[in-house]
Figure 1 (spheres, rainbow, N blue to C red):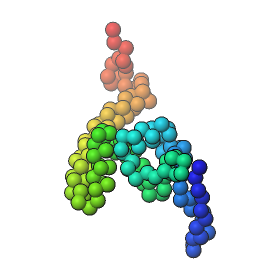
Figure 2: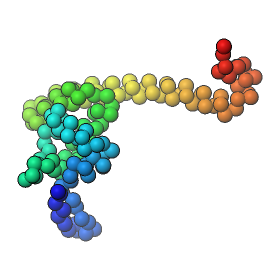
Figure 3: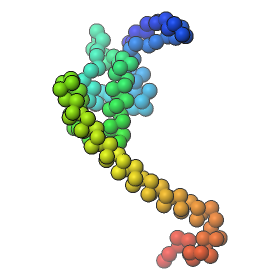
Figure 4: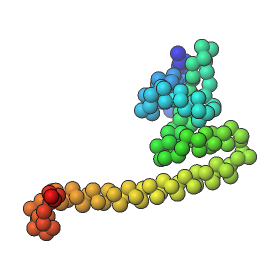
Length: 148
């Protein structure tokens, strides 16, 4: 169960939702509710609150946190490292340097992954180009794939 409160915005009279259920968050991020529960049990979402019935309740701030967890996971960071990052976040300003270093190191890994993907993409593109004009490729390179 989630609560919807109306907040009057001076510019637009928008309705602002303050709490989201686990299923709403799962849908928003393309995850299963089971995955979000797993992340919570692993300590990756230490800030998530619960309602009177014990159900997880997500705020807009929590959505930003879930987005960060998904970003780190999707870019190859291990669960144990995301947990460490989450732990440092709960410790406040005293762990800023550790968090900054961790993210900078992870960024370097992501850049390496991107460079490798760009090389692989170039090879795929070149193969597609061959298939777009197979007669010319046959003349230029000989047989296309069939090798016995």
